[in-house]
Length: 100
Image 1: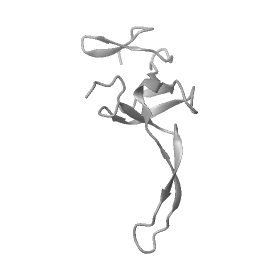
Image 2: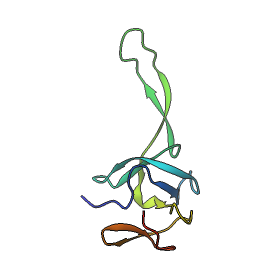
Image 3: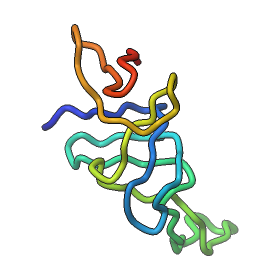
Image 4: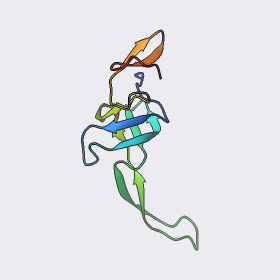
């Protein structure tokens, strides 16, 4: 299991795919699969069966997981997508040296 550079609640920029260039908030992180789920990014249509009698089935839209390598963290101070460094066990922006 690898350590992730992104945490839930972080703002990220999508680097590739159909949602390229979109900023969004990380909803969930899966370090085992090295994937993240970003709000309103990589939306797919899912077919849902009714679970109980009287429930309605149909199509719903849900966010699908992305590989973590396809997103880059956005610094809250300078507002730019940046790589993440480590200093004294804390995450540091490589562009403005701000801790977050």
